[in-house]
Length: 178
Length: 350
Image (tube, rainbow over all chains, first blue to last red; front, side, top):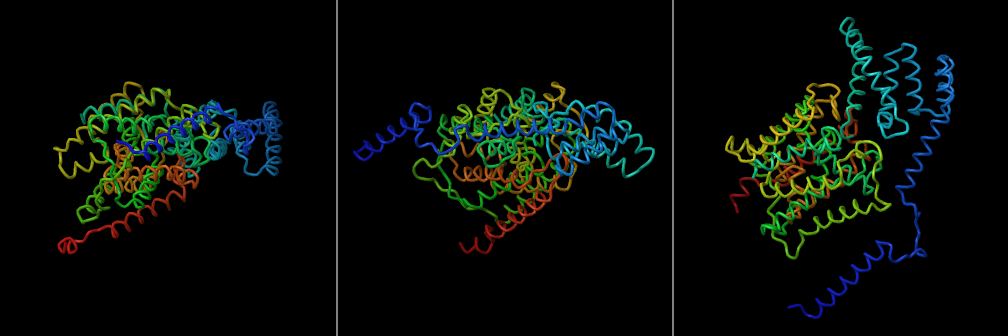
């Protein structure tokens, strides 16, 4: 049998529960007490990521244009110039890698792609605006047999390193939880 | 019941990956804990934030099972702080290997041969842990607790369920990366509930199966559950085309074999001292065990730290911080082995 103390506690629990549901469901608005950003941190972060992606794509567009015109030397110079303003930016590594691969500098190109993916996994993510998944998949599939046979013919540390890097990219493309 | 629990775990372990979870991660308690920690703001890796409904299912399925059969008992009081830290280091070991013991076997049955180093480590850790138990290492006896202490951990998971359903602005949900890959919410939750229910009934646990193999040999019932789990997951991986044997290019795997070994050795060792792997801790937390609840809290904090402090390994390998964290974990277990050891002379005096 519950005594008066228990009954008061139970009543207080019911009242508190009603208040929680009322506030959490938005039935009661307390805007005058609001101190934070109404958008919430998740929305704010999504906006920041969109802005960053737009910035990268716009800022480095000249490199893409030079690459499309097959002016690889000029494109590499532009990358070099931009690297002074944005040191360590993985998007520049991707661009440099793609130009090097086009020029036939395969092992160095592979290394650049991997360096970019290590810093930003968005490049192998189909849902990202920075997605380069198809390009990287093609790079891995096309280069793997050649690098393997080159290593068999000549056990050069450069080929060994390139093979390890390709396995890394292959693993990232395969997915998994990381 | 053990056979059924093992088979269902293997089936859902494969199928959840087919239904949307990351490759080879249909069920991975440590990955899910890291995702959940990120979702509630304990780390800022935007690719690892999602409240995994499977975890909620494990705890609430266990709660339903324990309540329905009168096995829910609030108990605890055995070395809460060491258990909290042990939970944290469980996740450190798993994060360095990339996966909990369940995922180890899911990866192995999908043909990922890099897991062999982790498997050797897990078995080694269990053997060392058993030597410790035989030598008198014990965190102390649990006591029955007054009130309904044991209900608070399941209550926390009910809150997580509310958060994943309501999705308030302060909870993060990745829109890319591995945490953006998930099976439909109700499917994940349902699978978790079924597994949680069966695991509570059967006491099935991967690490305990290995432990019992050394204690009881082939007579160990849990061992048959593990074999059912392996058989079903191999069949499932073959049927879904997920079986790709090899060392290279495996999803969520690295080639730092020494650290895979040590990471899983740490997990095996701690699991034996705690009486179960990360999965078993969730199940026990659901049936009123506050000590397991402390381990789960430690796991959640660990899930945040391994991402924030760059302890977690990636396909590129294990970071310096990851290596140091595993060694600190081993030091932690060694210190506790000394501090919580009841020596033969002291036992005889009593």
